[in-house]
Length: 122
Image (cartoon, rainbow, N blue to C red):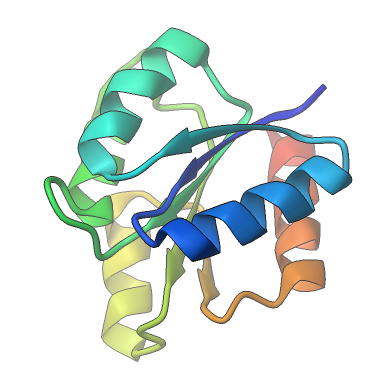
């Protein structure tokens, strides 16, 4: 079963996305901020990470940089999730090491295609 680490500080959005992913037979791990993601990812080794960019404690940009710099987790694909659809945010997310980018509100069918494509590419 494909395992997804969902990193999202908005509890309602986290719950909605997690439930929708579970309904598609994904195993979902949860992190509430980037620091939790950096701690969970090397322990659980998820197949892919969905990373909110703007979070307290440690933001998604820095968490992505740390995960991509770690040899243990550098191969895990990361899709940035953000409500800020600014061109600069997309570029900054990709520059930090994200493999793809999805805006909020999330277009769920499009997100599923991105997840599938990145896992197959891995």
